[in-house]
Amino acid sequence: MTEKITKELTILPSVCDSSAVLGIPDTFALFMDAATEHAGVLGCGIDVLAPRGLFWLTVRTRVRFFRRPRMLESVTLSTWPEPPGKLRTNRDYTLTSGDELLAAGKTEWTVLDQNTGRLHPAADVFSPEVDFHPAVVWPEPFTHMPDAPLDEFARYAVRSTDIDLGGHMNNAAYVRALAGAFSCEAWQAMRIRELEIAFRAPCHEGDELVLQKREADGGVLNLRAALPDGKTIVLARIVKG
Image 1 (spheres, rainbow, N blue to C red):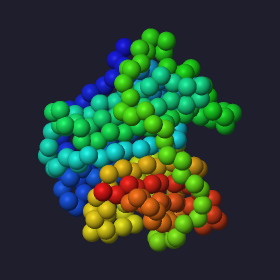
Image 2 (spheres, rainbow, N blue to C red):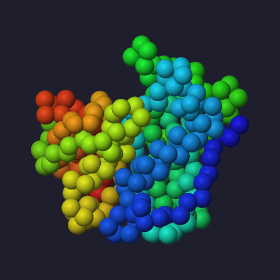
Image 3 (spheres, rainbow, N blue to C red):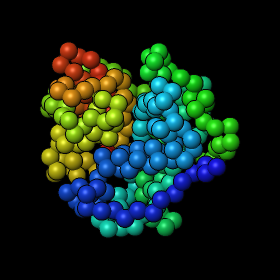
């Protein structure tokens, strides 16, 4: 069974930003798509889990950027799952050009039982035949991001194009909403080296997100998206270059 998949891609205009390189939200989307495709290969894709009332949930994702590939550049995307824990499992990603590492990512996943509303053992969804790839993109844990109100700087109306098959806002759409709250000039000036996002609660079409930010030491920008009643939806952290 294929423990790791590798795909050859061309960076097309539809995934590039105003600087004609792979967009940061688009990188998150490419990784998510590759994970979905590989889950199907491993026998734990949507078509297998849905009849059991099970649904993959992304808990948090961190992507580190070393060089974002330019428009029409050929790249290689690889992804593989780490051995699962009791309720959660990590998946790693790399984006390369020859021997050059362009970006690396890690996502923490869990499985929701929609019949009970509880988490389902992550190891149970993988076939016993899966021989997990031993590599990890980095060993350190995800960042602890304190959940506290920050300074409001924008609002975002969740629209139909943000909604996925689960009926709530798609994971990559949150990154796109945060990025879109900045001007092109401000976004590019940050020279983002890392973006990490933690998903705390779902939101739905018609909801309004209050977007908040606050600068921290070490070139870090903390972000938070919440409902108007204060309920936290996502927390995010940008490390600037």
